[in-house]
Image (cartoon, rainbow, N blue to C red; front, side):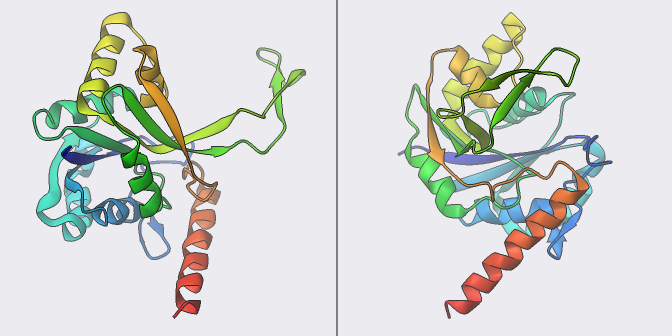
Length: 235
């Protein structure tokens, strides 16, 4: 049986948001707390590591410790890129897990059942990610311009989300190769694809949004309010 760990990446500068965003309030709680609570609800995670800016260590500890207790270990300093931050987290978890769910702290609305579904897909040489179908018509523009160059077929396109799931060995191999060959990717699945790991999608919904701009806070808060109403109405 694989030993699972969660790795939450919360080290971004939040340039489009206007500053460090992981601790801003959404629906009455710090944004990071929602992601951590989802991971804490999965019994298979024996440990959960958080990668964040070093100046945020104490604040993250105050938010995370009441939710995770002794499962919070360790808090890790982030890097200059998301890829480097994940690599730092992998090094900190060496020997402590067999498989990982890597989640962006800026996706607070992830559902526990979707995390568990992704975990079930993982085996050596096989990874998984949450994703939602692309529903908009996609337009490709000319380089450096807003002139439309082409319409892109959307039938087989999905928007990648997190968590993304893989064995520790596969993730480490993917990140180590990326360092040697100078490969950069915007997510871990891209690095896993590059070393031949088969990656499968676990369908999610647009609710699992990434809080990128200030307006996204209200969208996330509305999702939590709607969920609370559904739960309350079911009693």
